[in-house]
Length: 123
Image (cartoon, rainbow, N blue to C red; front, side):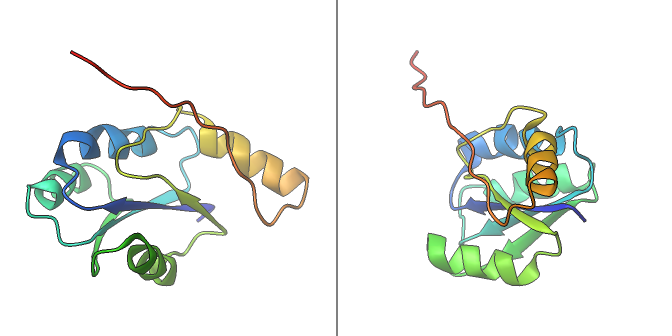
């Protein structure tokens, strides 16, 4: 396993499918997708369960709420050489983890940070 992608979720139903699909569609296939739920009550977990039926790399992990708690819970479960973080309202370009993995390996990096583009959707 090259990368464990941690996705923190808490009542993220309106974003979670786009987020998880963007991780599922990564060109780097040797990843695991850990969705760490902090106690969602809006159908987030059910939406992720449906996605998990189509992709065995997805695991749902239950945790107490709070980004720190959820991160630590996911970190304990992660099996990858590297840890990737994707918040539940984000989505990734398809080759992000492949490029990052290649750079990290070729430069022998312990940590690598990506740029982000922020946007706001309006009706």
